[in-house]
Image (spheres, rainbow over the protein chains, first blue to last red):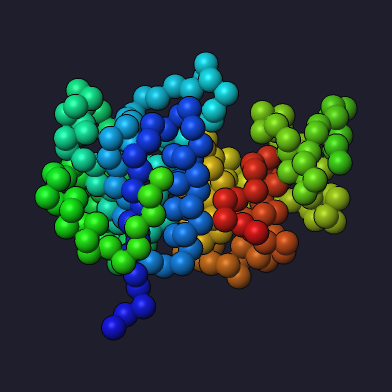
Length: 135
Length: 110
């Protein structure tokens, strides 16, 4: 039995307007120091967190969309996006940022860890997680 | 406590980080280093410039573990280790180098 637990961060809210998305991202950045297996899931308005080209210059909030692109460096292995939520908002994976992942020791790499999944896969992924954090 | 750089007074927070990242000029690093009794070399500047580029791209200051790996990748394996980085920045490469670079304190750094 390994001590590595599967952590799932579930994000359901739009990136700006409330503090939830930023708080979730900060917890992921901090939690990554503990060497757990970390995945993120984006559902409902949460999918907007990964839409590229966001511009917050007219608001009081910092644009933290670029920060998601470093999550691979923080050991995040998977970023799942709900297909239905994307479709309902007229979005496709082409509208989303890409996040690279690389194992620095083995140089094994994945060009993009952002992946669209359907409801059945989401249910499975949540069921196999040891811990689910919901934001 | 505010610091004076090139004749301008710049606000800092209670831990000495620049209050406004846009205030940064290279002189900020020199003044802060001098206060710590440190002379900045090209090796220090490699790390400071690296941090500024990282922040520009990702909008956060990297955790020290991420910094160490990324420096190793960009500047060579001999520099991507904590011994080398602590040698340059004895108060902690994350905290001290980020402060010199005008960045906020790294997320997750307590």
